[in-house]
Image (cartoon, protein in one colour):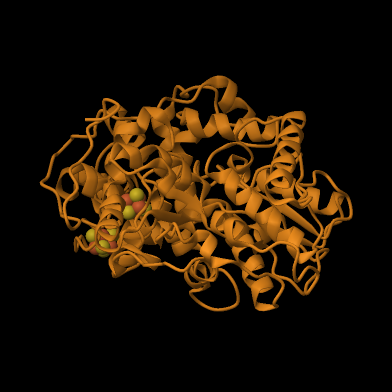
Length: 500
Ligand code: SF4
Ligand code: SF4
């Protein structure tokens, strides 16, 4: 026991747990409140005819998203996905098997949208959308981090994450929202970022970090704010401005821009790369949040947009920005739109603009945690698999000691940190502790076999989650850090400037 949470025992390998039906049935998130729901255009509270409206909304979504209709129909219950979810592996609750999680929606779908379900519900396990079903939806669709690991193992490619997003969208539409995610989206609309950092506080922090870097390096490395005419708009997760170890990566980005001699700016209006519109399953909110970035790119007259280390932010940027707020034809088309900070740094290394003292990271034996939304929902760079190779190239360019974890736990089979998908909230701590167990098992193995002592990441949520979880498993908090933290440690300043 640690922090009053039951911490699973770590074995040599990830094992399929004994079934514990209903063991996580008590753990639902806090419900959203009126002041966060209304600004998002959701009902303030559960609407009186919620059963009817929920079924209508499901019907609308089946028409709008053909994939959802297909996912409802084609599952053959083969069970290949059953033991692939980290939340099932950590909890043993069958409702955390992807197939069972999806069945919560499929049983409702059959009841209202199939002839057999309408006439003989008992024969086809069709269920009413009633109070008990809504409770199960609210509980177990908030025990899915939308990581998409199950879809990698499904022979039909069924994406349970998409089913989870649809369930959350339906619940929002009937006034049954999730407090943590709706509060954060409301904060972005109000202030501009997830953490609610106003411009004076952001400006003060950036100034403090500039002073810190001057003292530590002797170089005037800038973190410019709202600089019209800069070459690049840097959009980072707001955690990079205030949280550890995120802030170390922010300083790494700044050193890269400084050393390459490329002007850039952060925006106080679009001071958030993260986009929780994805977590609540709302296209409209996703669009509204990312619009701030497109507007600022225009207003500040930049030529490029670079996105910092944040997994789902990169998914939204890479996979959806163009549809949501494009075209971005006002930017310089010689560069990718958007460009990931790892891709940006990687390209500069290739051009000879950056050099490193790898010995600066000799205290570390590094391994890499692939974040779900980068690994399974986006790409990076011009080549397939770039989302895996580019960050690893950066690690190898800046460190002498690198080793990967077991192949079943990396690349597209990577395991979720346990806190993604809008679940990084304290009331779900028990789920987060258990859900991180498979990743910790793989990490502990390379710690034992190869003396690994640094877990490199490119996701703000993974950093925050592991920062809290690893100490519960007896691993020091400072084991976790960003890829650009390693870049920051090793980059040689004052040479090669401007060779681009
Ligand atoms: S998307 Fe991830 S969290 Fe959700 S059911 Fe699949 S494996 Fe589990
Ligand atoms: S692997 Fe695919 S088809 Fe098989 S049970 Fe899971 S979702 Fe259904």
